[in-house]
Each structure stands twice: as structure tokens, then as C-alpha cells.
Image 1: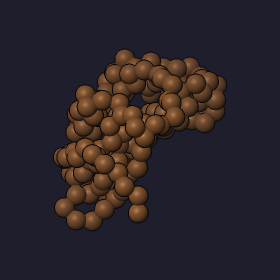
Image 2: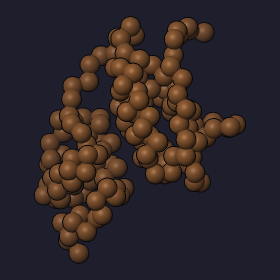
Image 3: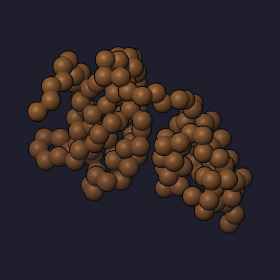
Length: 153
């Protein structure tokens, strides 16, 4: 079966490991050329372009933007406590770890499975991020706590 047939047979909204790798590559450098992406994914340019179009159509990729240097006084920082509904946890974490809002992720013991440190521009962006995480396959619950003040040491 060709790459294009495989891509066209995927169910809308379903993502595979190549989609996740493509998303991770674009999250690191949204200006990467189709040729470079194709080389890194070991796919044809046409197959990469078809995957990108499907991810955009399915609203997985919502746009491409410039990432500015972080200013500690701008935006909103939050700590998200995550509980997963499946084991092992690694496949669940792989679905969201590359998202640009997530600045750190920790696997932890205790009442939750993981803690994500996130930065968003607005409270509305934080709400959308929590909704996206909650809708992620394998994520059972997300609780957020907005950081009011950060102190070193």
C-alpha cells in the first residue's frame, strides 16, 4: 500500500506515530521545508503535505506562528496536575509533550500521574489548553493552579 493510500485510509481525527513526529518537528521549527520534513520522516514530500493538510483540516494544527523570547512579566503560568486512564503513561504523554505551551513535564508519584508547567498568554488560552488536554486520549483528568508568584531557591 502506498503512503498516500495509507494516509487517505486514516480515520479523521486519528493520529499515528508519524503524525506525532510531524507535529513535534513543526512545533520545534514551523518553517522547516517539506523536503526536510520528508527526509526526517522517511516519507515523500507529497505524503508529508497530505498529512499536514489532514492535520490542518482536522483542526489538530491550528496555525503557524512566531515564538517570541519569554518575558517573565508577560503571560500566565500555571501548574497542571494530570491523571491518566491507561498504563504505561509514556504513550499518553507523547501525545501532548511537544505542545509549545508546556515548558516542563514531570512524571510523579502520588495522587496524580504527571505535572505540567505551562505558559499561556491569557486565561482564555489556559482554558483552551486545559480543554485540549482533557480531550486527549488517555488523559482522565486535568486540574490547574495559576502561579501567582515565583521565587527562586
